Image (tube, rainbow, N blue to C red; front, side):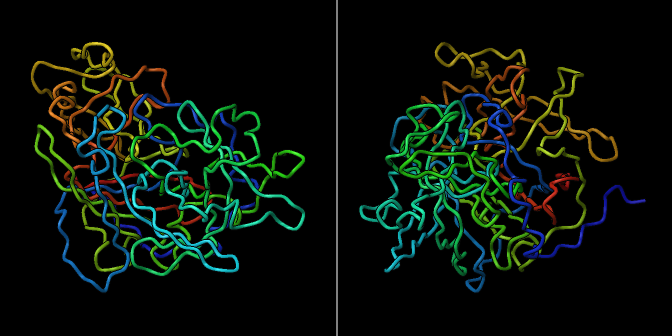
Length: 427
């Protein structure tokens, strides 16, 4: 008997599949435990993830409209680097706000984030005269929809506005809810706290976030605001922030991420690809011979290292700039980088993940000297390791360095349940 499972039949999501009962996507702030310092955005998702090593140079076809270039490390080229801004993947999107006149602009430095859902625009990317507060008035009853989203140890507060959004060169996604983190007269209510209104998170060079996780809705806390203040609200599925890819007409059942290999000592910016859809076009077909690994409803898998018999929760995440593992007894860097690994010479850590047949699959993780990489001004590095507390949620994060030299397929659940998630690789 073959040791691989048959590939599933892949179909674009239907409109019925994409809908969920009002309020079903709402979660409390406690659902988003702030992960370690490298976390670039909220992480809670479930999905069927397929990853395989392979060529990162697919045949070019100008007739395909589902391809989006991804630049890693480009926003920090020539600037001061830190562990929080190395390995940042960015994409572009075109946004149009419709009132009496259609007002359009392009955001070119969106953080590509497989660990959150929804499109968010920071003030730095909003052209003068295009802010929703000046373009779109409040509704007839003088109310507007606002969202508070837990973001690391802070919260992102901003108005939710429908917009026409174009990813790649395909057709625009009509009336997609977008969060604009602009300044307003509405102070962020609890539990958002103070000092978050109109401010972008501390990710240098980033103008927004494109969240493409397999969880449809982002789990933020919504409010209806008016001149009398803000009150909690449960918007309908058509009003709430949603993964934009799931609102695509055809290529909406998943994504493919392709990145080239990088040298062991890192390098400058690289170009990869984001493909919309899985099995919907010539360039995003699944290969044969993949093995499956189970994930829970939050997108977490179980994993351990070769130094421990204990299983921890883990996730795969483009929005995390480093590899995040429990303490591996590897020498640490000097303060203030003592949470990073600085071995005298490169070393490997083995991560073991059980597949659906209870067989352990070994993934070798290269660990280098973080101080050296930052001193050499490598805006892309595949061997940065952060020591996570075992109490963090989760303690395993296979961040952006794990994606280099691989093709990664993420298949979205066919219904709104998010159950039965898996990831798979030909390995």
